[in-house]
Image: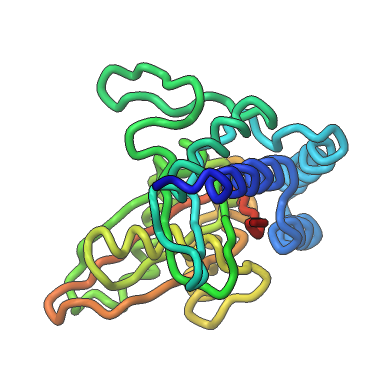
Length: 275
């Protein structure tokens, strides 16, 4: 039986999370952009970063989306032990996306993959993507993904002997992408697991705080910035603002590696569901 109270509460939380993510950058993401603007040596790149920061400020001031491509919603739910996983969870998320499409508003981006018919409400077959995990609190986290960055993402089934080549694989991903994903970007890297698991890890890595990187993440970051692609692909020191890596054990004969590219607008927000 569908629990209407649960579904409505989740719809409300999803709508609020999408509004927050689309209009206001997370503090750690904003700080990364500000740091890049302070240290960038290229005059043209500094101008691009200043324009990005002005865009962010105007979006919050006017309470409008940061970017005209409001993306497709990717949703992560944490369920406490007393909340069962039921169809009400998925119904609530879908309704929240419909509401946000009108209220925020969100650009209708979801289409049939073959006919390209637009659903009009960002809900369709397999959309929004909903990932559910156990947790202490009942929360909804949204990660809107625009097409420019998503289209530049990449998955490779490397050989185990190629572990040392992972930074090169990530740098090659951005070399091919160039300015298409609206750099400076954030890169989520998934290493290990399975073909599909590595892609999931890469996307989940984009939910991690970007104000710190470990030595391995910094190594990859430096390799990408050495390309000189720069903000909006016009050259400069800053091609990537942060690299975040998530790992999982894999088969002895396999080394899946995925790179999920996110543009400078690394939009994400978490809202607690109130029952």
